[in-house]
Structures are given as structure tokens and as C-alpha cells.
Image (tube, rainbow, N blue to C red):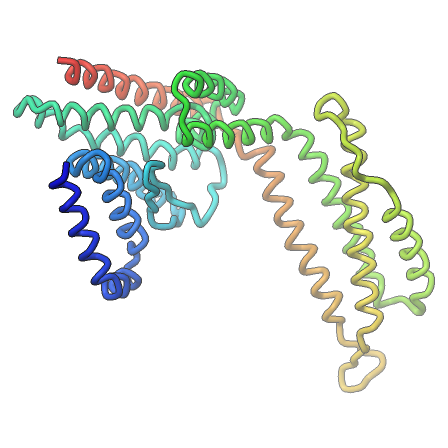
Length: 370
């Protein structure tokens, strides 16, 4: 143990002494973040469990993440480099979101599949050497990827089964809750909380659709209103009407709490009023800016006014928000739609991989208990 600590301290001293040129070399590398975070993770695991264990675990995690990267590349989705987090695993971020759950499931499946392939070489190595270390590699690989196949979002399993039904997430949460009760840990707690939030948000999908649709109507009204302003001969009537609306809606009490599901009708009306308040005030602020903006004309011709930059910016912002709403509406409505043939393929692939990993997990346990 003392020898291992001495080696680690020597490596740490070397890295600190040469940190400047190492960082300058890595910052030009596309995989600089991956290499640095992998090195830190490797060092952290080695400090507690030894180098052999650390190298095996980091290798298994790395191949798992590369499975996601390869799957994403096959679907034309850009990703960030893999980032390792000591005692938490690793992750990659998608720079583009999949257009449907089928594509997301494909990306998610790539991780556990590659993770299984990663530990297969340990089988012949164990058969040849009878070294239980290779049984440990099989055990770690099977356990890590089986855990990732739990049908809980954001784990890979949750993203895969979303093609079948997002209702399965609740079953996964129950299973994860049992695991959490039996063997509590910080990572499991974080995953459980994220999974609970994701499941709840999906459960509230129909409520969210109503809000999104109402906001789309408010944006349409906003755009129609500002389109009429340049043709006004006098702004007095519009100013008076909007000023009255702003004063009235700003005086309303919109902080009341209503119980979700039980008081959804009242809750929805309150949230509609909140959106009204947002867009009434936004329209009022834009109107005041536009009124103070000097009118410019092409070639000083009073019959050819130059379109207002203020109104143009307001319409552009409204259109950008409308695009965001359309994307959110897609996520809530058609994102999880898939034909029956696709669902059957996903189900067979998911259960098949889970069964194979379970068999390897049991086999590895037998090796380690000999």
C-alpha cells in the first residue's frame, strides 16, 4: 500500500512540475477534456482500489461512452467529447437533439452494447489464466451496463423503453427506489431524483400542451398587433387601451397555489393569466420603445417609411419563441410515436441485451465465489 502511494505521489509531482506544457499540449487536442478527466479519474480510482482495478473500470466506462458516440455519428448527431467524473462515471452531451424517441433509443442502446463487447475479451483470458481478476472485469462490465439498462430516465434503459411507453419509467423508479433503500448511495439518489422529475413532467404532458397552445395564441396576437402599428394615424387610442390593460393585469394576484391534478382547472386559469401578463407587458414595453424611435424614410420620401428596427426585433424574438414552442409541442405529442414494428424490435433488443448481461453477471459471480 505504501509503495502504491509513493508511486502515485511521484506521478502527481511529475504532473504538477510539468503542468504548463501538458495543458498547452492538450488544449489543442479535440480530446483534451477526455484525456484530462480520464487521467484524474484513473488516479482517483487507483488511490483507493489499485491500478489494475482503476484501468479496468475506466476502460469499461470509456468503451461504453464510445458506443454512444459511434451511434450518434451514425445518426448524424454531433456530440461533445466524453467527460469523466471520479466515482460517478462519464457522460457525453449531444449538440443536436434527436428528432424522435426511436433515434434517441438507438443512441442509448449503443452504450450498453459496446459496454458488453468491452468485457468479452476477459472471458478467454480467464479461461486461459484462471486469474479471478478477469472474472472481476466481467462482473464490473455486466453490472455497470445492467444498471444503465434500468428503465429510468436519464439512464440508457429509460431512453430505450420510451419508444414502448414512458409509463414504464414508473416501474423503473419503483425498482430503483428498492435498490436505494437496500443500498443507498449519492449517485443512485441523484438518478432517482432526476428520474422522478422526468416522469412527473411527462405525466403532466397534456397540461403542458394546453399552456404551449395558449402561449402560441398570445404570440400570434402579439405579432398581429405590432404589424398594425405602422399604419396608425394616431397612437393615442392604442396607448390608452394598453395602459389600462397593463395596470389591470399587474394588480391581479397570480401567486395562489393550486394542487396539481386535483385543482388543474384553477391552476390552468392562473397560468393563462401569467402568460397574459408576460405578453401584455412585453407589448407595452415594445410600444413605448417604438413611439420614441424616430421615423426614417427612403430618399426622404414621406410616402416610403423605412421599417422600424424596434418592431423588426420584436417580431424576430416572437418568431424565435414560436419555434421553441413548436419544438416543445413536438416533444410532447409526436416525439414518442413509433410504429408497432419498431416497438417490437426495440423490446426484443432491450430484453435480449438485458438477458445476456444478466447471464454474464451470474457467471462472473460464480467465478468470484470460487
